[in-house]
Image (tube, rainbow, N blue to C red; front, side):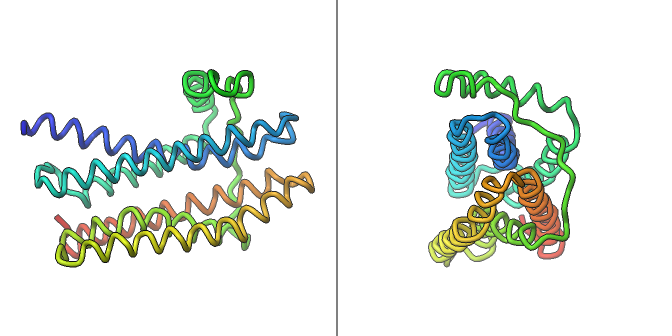
Length: 233
């Protein structure tokens, strides 16, 4: 296959991974607007955005598997994850801190969500996030984000060096996803919905988003260490 075509395909995969990271954060922002918007249909919008993030992750995983098993990657799997994690960190910071990201997200909603959700699909749910690093919820959110992303990254990164156990690594990733789901449903979601009932949802959402940002920094550092120290190719 032509190397230029492969490079374009890899670039698309990287941007798909970045989009998934941004959508995952934006879904929390949308959830926090339920009481402000006055309709619980906003929760349906948030769930759809979060599900889109998962779909984008799975599309990326499929594409990276194809590149890895076909042995046609031009930059290597660790580099692809490294670029996506670094760019994702920058984009999450932009979404949280800079108002010009609001219209971009609103345009994406109008294209993708209006036909399904009507008026709620047109609204921009972006809001300025003040980070909260000193909450228990923040660090549970870190765990959830780490488990979800490591479940995606780890099987690929380690199978490059240990191809003989790649099936075991793949199912270990599923186990990490299971752990993330347990923490999400039994603690993070429970605390968030209690905050909705109490009218304290924005403070709660800030902590969840801060946890996702911290996890992103850890992932960037981890991929960098694998690539440089361990010589991931």
